[in-house]
Image (cartoon, rainbow, N blue to C red; front, side, top):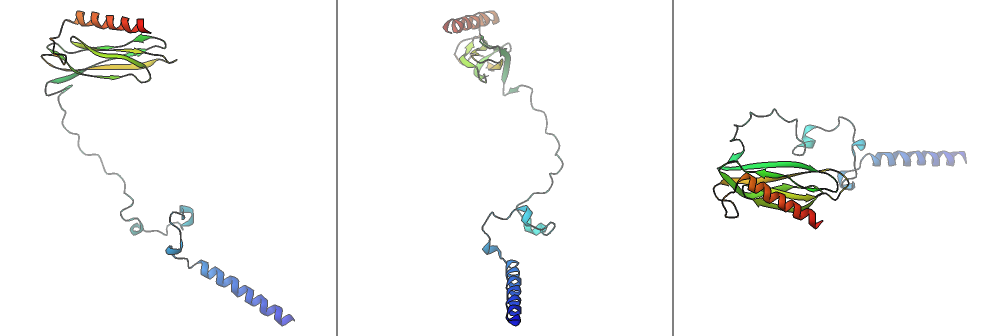
Length: 178
């Protein structure tokens, strides 16, 4: 009886050793994709060739700065911008004026969470009316894209005072609608 227990014990030990040997012989074909993580890989066991084409090296030094372009203009076009913070519950907005001798040929604006009432050309300017229906102040802006001569509306630019008056009237109408 002692001999059979010894044989069974030896067989069991060999079976366990064989299982451990088999576990160390797992191939890549037996591993499901994306299941091995960095903690499963022995430190310093991978070489540069293991990462060829998939990992970039350190970024090199910055190149020389390019030459400065013309300030604020491209082929006779300039952009004038005006900014304003519109307070909670307020209806208001900024007005951007084109330089002398030019008129708006386009517009741009930023209102974040404010409601846009209008973005419109007023003679030699672009004005925007915003309603801030939030509980926080909102930074807004408007841009007048300016070119020489006739405006985008086909009219000749009027005086700054006339543009301001027309913008103020438009803001008053927007306030009355609220």
